[in-house]
Length: 204
Image (cartoon, rainbow, N blue to C red; front, side, top):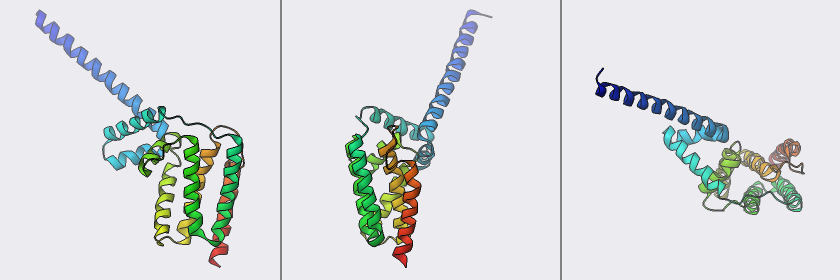
């Protein structure tokens, strides 16, 4: 084989190896993002309609999150917020619309104290999705109900579900530093039951 033939063969081999390496890196990146974001990965892929764009967006969220100073709440603040949530939950019995607005504000206060920037809602949800991908969609749904509730367009059942959605994020925001506090997973089940009972009393 002439020299130029060997050169072409060498180039072809390099291209094939580079393609294999690139595909391997892309597959690892995909797996990493899927593991990090869980259901939020598929939601973003569906929203963008393009896997590459979705992964670029999720990677950008990670980079932004790494620059934020997200910190755990001190025990005193966690207990205080737990008590405030209990009051909001009780308020749902007599005034679901007021309770939903209060729950939205309470979650926002916790996020602020944790260090999340309170930009527009979509950016806020994107920031939260990095640390709490399993419940960020609940946050979006709860916020949508809260907005409908302000316009008087949400039913009691809508508001009950919104309270549960807010609660799922609220518990994670308070409890993700690894310590057991009043609003951890044991109380989540009880809280959901309380809201169910509230609905029954409200609709009688």
